[in-house]
Image (cartoon, rainbow, N blue to C red; front, side, top):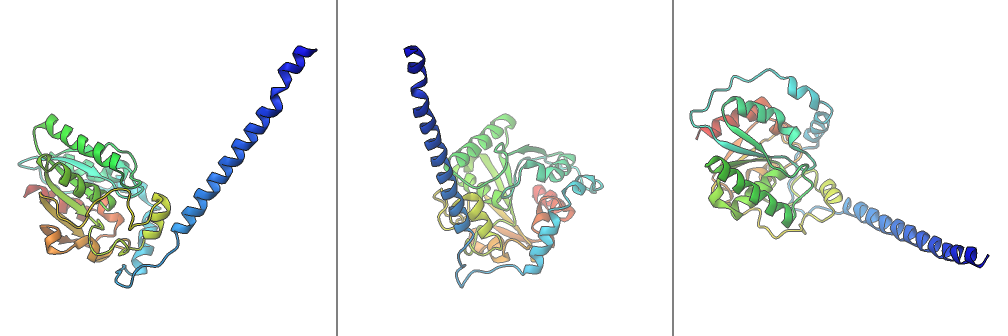
Amino acid sequence: MSSVVSILSPVPGRIVDTLRGVANAVRGAGTALRRRFDLLRGEAPPNAHTPPLRFLAAEVAELFAPAFRLFKAPLPIERAVHPRVVILLPGFAANPQSMKRMARELERAGHTVKRWGLGSNFGPTAENFEQLAQRVCSVKQRYGQDVVLIGWSLGGIFAREVAKMEPGCVAKVITMGTPFSHTPYSNNVWRIYQAVAGHHVEEPPVKADVAQKPPVETVAFWSPRDGAISRRSACGRPEERDRAMALRCSHMGFCYSSEAILALAEELKR
């Protein structure tokens, strides 16, 4: 009998410890959830410049038709005389699959197209900057050629910063609808970004002067029809990039539209 009591006696204490752990986990989750809701609030500064909301509505509609992008007819794209090695960097909350049509068409032109190797893009950290920099140098070593970084939206921030870290491995940076200039509030999605990424746009988890031009050729694609990112932010000032090119696509269209892909193919010839 005493042996049975000795076995059962620790059980209540274990139950209490388990309940205490569950309560702490619930409190922690509640605190995290409240912080995410707080990050949805706030006001942009007076100098922020945002695209018209009618363009943002068009971007939302684009989210419901990703499957049709892969079934578009092949483009009249020319074979490259001097094929390049390219790494595609997806936008915020997107993954390499979102740029599959672009990859396919650039490969048809003879370019070697590689993924960035970081999965979905949920914002910058010192660790994923370093991982991407290592991948860029590894790709250069493998193919014996400096790499062209093509970054869509937030992916362009990664491209610009990695080019500053490893300029000897990067031939060119091409950004598409990337918010590297003006203020971090010059867009229609900063609240959503804050809630998902978990930090204020003015307090990124990495130290970076995103407006500073990388020490390699840097080209900025932007669009007056971009419903997410302001043209002032995506085009940038002359000292922040070497050249800027205006397209007529939506923000989502940068990653798959025929116009954007053909413009990239031309840019890779330079």
